[in-house]
Length: 105
Image 1: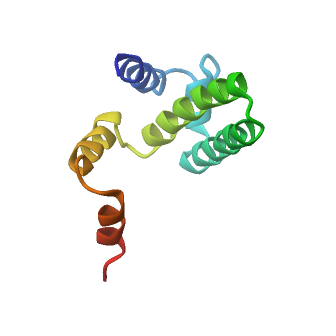
Image 2 (image 1 turned 30 degrees about the horizontal axis):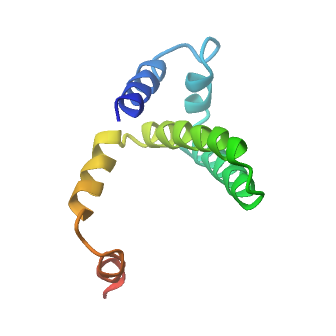
């Protein structure tokens, strides 16, 4: 988890940078909607590599997905710790039970 934490910290730091000097700052300057769009593009690319059974492509695209997920979270003020806390909360709960609790009226 240190790598993801380090990456999240780097993204938070780059958010303060000049968009002309940082890809991350440039993407964040375009707004949360563009960050979400880029995350979606990367997710689709990962799906394509998985369907093609391209292990190396899937690894590479998955790294892009994680990076762009963290950028998207940063754009909305959500931290990696917020997401990890939610995963901790769900730990030990059946996926079926957790989904049912989210869709219950």
